[in-house]
Length: 387
Ligand SMILES: Cc1ncc(COP(=O)(O)O)c(C=O)c1O
Image (cartoon, rainbow, N blue to C red; front, side, top):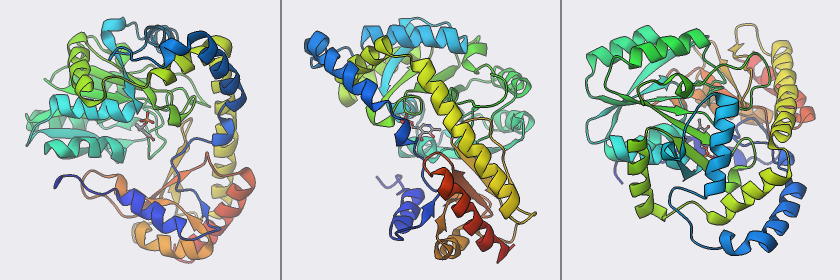
């Protein structure tokens, strides 16, 4: 327990929730107005009548067969990942995939390499095992592969790499194809495993599809994590891991001890939903809604923010990353922003070690278009008072 730290982000969110009426860009949630509630209600009722005994019964640790088949078919069709049931296991959210991987690969003194910044939940999943962290920088094209090569050559204790190549949380950045190829060349030289966390890959609303690392994996080094959280609903806690058969066998053994299996009801329910409704069409609706909000927010930021404030222009996902002038401490500035009636997450909390203080993460999915305009105007006003 001494290695587990409370989440600084949760503390910030608590602070924000104490200020009623604040327009908050601090959330990390999908838009609940896009959950297909009616379709889920109809397909779930039918499913209980037709498959109730199966849905309420125990199932296999690996997962419900028809669910695994759906995932394998989708990965082949959409991601060019050609896998078999030996390569996958269902997980309770991709968060459990992260926790399983950490338990499998890490022990005291091992090193985890993560992008600078990265998803705190991934970093925190590694902390209980006494891992140390090294951050590698990213630029507009993705992770800095030269820096990565240097880190790997100088640190034989690196066991795991944790990366989010598509519309990363927190920056919204996506790696180019060239950078992905360069990354694979580097990691193939070393005895390391890579977690490719891809919860946002299907929420591309602009630009061309870029292949996953897993689809380029010739040595079984990539542990790919997929999730229904952002394409259907996170409350289902429905996700999967795709990796080489040895890793999957170990994951199955650990998972059996943790929770026996994923929620059987939810797996049968999601299959019933996908059999009756077009998930791909539903995802297109999410892409369009997020595109509209993201573009509106970027246009307002362009108009309202001081010229020395920079920000990413994501082609998918749920977040925009803002870089303030170097002298601004975004954590201290949050109090000022709250006075103006607007909130965000200070970016320094997304670094495994110390990070720069002049950044913030802004979410565009849960705020209405009207509030986006109002909130960015208020934040712009607050920023002009210090930038
Ligand atoms: C990068 C990343 N990985 C994993 C997760 C957890 O996803 P899940 O709901 O599948 O556990 C999140 C959630 O926001 C995330 O942003």
